[in-house]
Amino acid sequence: MREAIQNYITYLKEAKNAAYNTVISYERDLRKMKDYMEKQGIWTVDKVTPTALNAYVLYLESSGMSSATISRTVAALRRFFDYQCKHGGCSQDPTELLKAPRVERKAARTVSKDELSRLLDIQAEGPKQLRDRAMVLSMCQGIRASEVIGLTL
Image 1 (cartoon, rainbow, N blue to C red):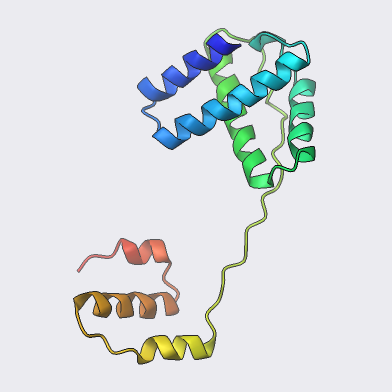
Image 2 (image 1 turned 90 degrees about the vertical axis):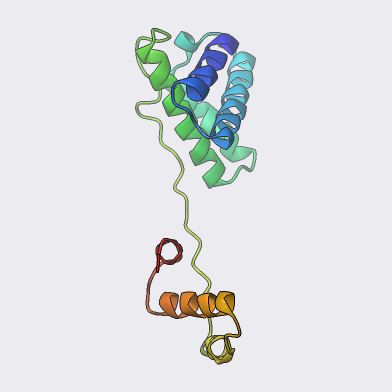
C-alpha cells in the first residue's frame, strides 16, 4: 500500500499540480489510513473493503477528530481509491458508499450597532484607511468579503 500511496502523491504533484498543502494533507491522511489497515491485516489496496473504511471512519470519530478533519480525510480517501480503480489498483471502489460526517458551519460573528457606529465614525486619513472604510461599508450592504477583495477601481 505504501507504493500505491507514493504513486498517487507523485501523480498529485506532477499530473495534477496540486497545491503543496493539499499534497501534504493527503499524504498524511493516506498514511494514517494505511497504518490503520495494516493493523487490521490489510496490506494492499485491493483488499480494502467498504466495511474496513467505515470502521476506519468510526475509529477517527472515536479518537476525537473534528468532523471537518474527518470529512477532509474521507475526501482524500475517495480521490485516492478513485485513482487506484482507474489505474488498476482495485476492481471496485470501496469508497462508493462511504459517508463523511456532517460538518457544521460556525455562525458568523455579527457586529453590534455600537461597534458598527464606532467603525463608521473613524475618519479616513489616507488611502488605506479610505479603502478600509469602503470595505466595511460594502460588507454592511451585504457584499461578501471575497467579492470586496475582488473589486477593482
